[in-house]
Image 1 (cartoon, rainbow, N blue to C red):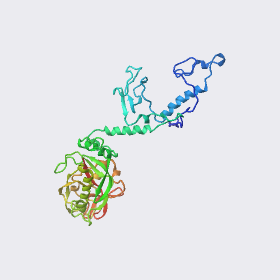
Image 2: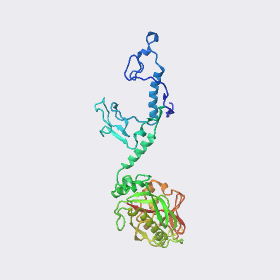
Image 3: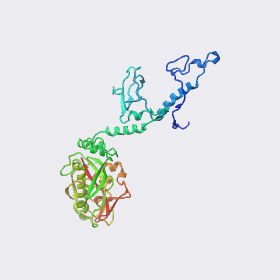
Image 4: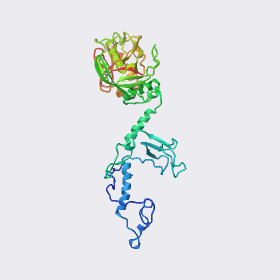
Length: 415
């Protein structure tokens, strides 16, 4: 069997410049028609009274079919005709949208002629984004050539994708299972995002979507894509409960570099580190200035000192966070290994992951988000007496001495 493949498209409309003779619709015993094509008289010998078909008549037939083939090759869709009959499954254009016939309809059917916008039981609208000008091929010059303003197939795909997201089931659980990856800055600025967070539907908000917002930290302004990492991640947690619906946001890439401590020590655990005491507060100020009341605080429990416990990962390493921590109010904070990887890799203590015990949905759905630009960045887990955990620039989980300078990539709660 010959391979099935797409044939070559016409470069021009066949018969576009041909001289033609008009063809009537109604049948005739003497002349060609759209109903009968060439009647029997053209079969008779000329000597017996027959007629010879004219070249211009053939040109007209071929041009009519050529125009229709060219139209379909370019993604054209016929507009609704109230005089036509449509079977179930037919697709037509009407008022800038596409409609699917759910039932047979038309002047010659029992249902009669039903306009696509008149009855939702007969026609179903398929998309809303395509204008009539972009759906239909139109004449543009005296030469009668045809062109499309936009590619129809890409318009339909974009429309279906948009409808899919906007009609997705409501709720944090459903939305945490679906990747977005879209720029929703305009929707946030318009207040739509915040409204859909507040009511707990998270309508049209998914992990991977991002909001572009400048943040000024210690006098330096950074243009940051704040990625939606999870929906309602901290809901119901804390000694003072987080009750507001929210999304977790994280920078798409580290904002800047800093050290965890001036010296290679984890003596005071993460709570007492230079990162937590000095750097994170400056980021918190920048976030509040950028997003205002859309950033909410949350309660976290963070260890305050380390013990000489032997490492469960490497022989000879010692040091890990103490099993208890202080309750602190945070505006933003570094992530831990569980939030990023879904498990502890180098971290020693359970208290490092007390309230970040689940992998953020965006990292689960797209591991490339963990290392988007091959830049190492800090995590808050204590690994040993001298080192904290980090996400490595090579894409692996790793660790390093506290005095080294690596990326700062905190999370915050947005409402």
